[in-house]
Length: 165
Length: 229
Image (cartoon, rainbow over all chains, first blue to last red; front, side, top):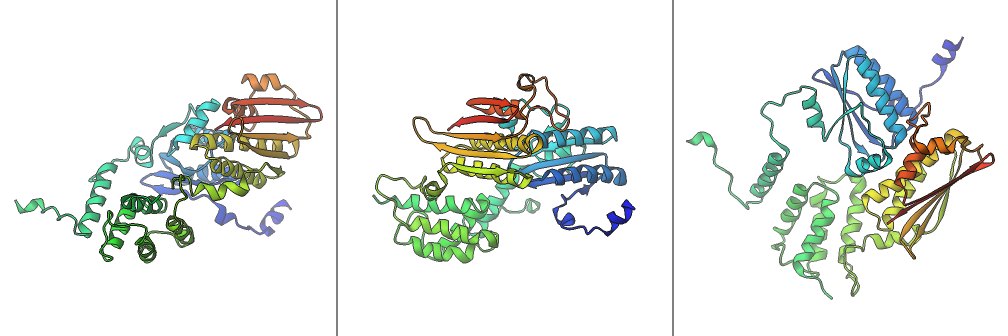
């Protein structure tokens, strides 16, 4: 009986409000953005754990750089998610916490002791064993972008290719 | 009281940086000045309208369509001469400071009410000139208090009061007609653990506060919370 009711019920806005879970090189990336409702958070937990089982992901990075507010409830949800994933054998890394959010949580006495954290997504993936080949550091990227901008405006001449030697 | 012409360009750049990366902002500005045969040093108040007009198409590729009107408005504020003795920097804050700096009460019944209240708290703090951490504290505290009201008291009200004198501060008063907090001492001592959270909601708010007071009884709970700016 109850199954019939469930099937008949429409599924409004569920797909649009769903938080994306991105499989990447054997890991999952979960970017959190904006204002996350409790319903979305609960949905996320079950979706992530199901995806871990389905894909056999070895690790997961939860990126919270897009969240403007993290309170004790959301921390509890994230801690529970990490603990559940660990029970399944999957390592969770939380990354991208902003300075003000970190200061606030620290002041409140919220430690998130059982969750590993990194500064950014790159460091998070590195912690999970993803190796970058031929990549450049963020500072080098910035410098290169700046140089390209200057070149495009004719403010500096392009550096000669090294193979000319 | 005319500003130095070099700072004129710096102001434009500062606005652009709010909407795009530093590199893109510099690229757009230089790419705009060059065809106008201007340089960062020669742009003064007289050239500014021309520069801003030329910036409009140049920024198109870098700025989300939804944010373009905002960018245009911010650039236009640069053309208004700064009042004597009033530096430019606080100018964008001044218009927002008017209507929002009144005590406001928010009814909290649902999660979206709570979300609305904490956003309003952050905006009020920002328009009072609060720094990032202070605004984060206020918004987080409002979030915790609203959450408690919904979970334990069937809802309540949150009042935000900005004070300028004798001290600049933002006061949050959370009031509900619930059955009260049965074991307040244990909650505030940190030994309590709620089923759903970490049991740190109210204690966390206390730790964030510059002044904190809670009165609770069988007819309701009143939490007073202040963050000094």
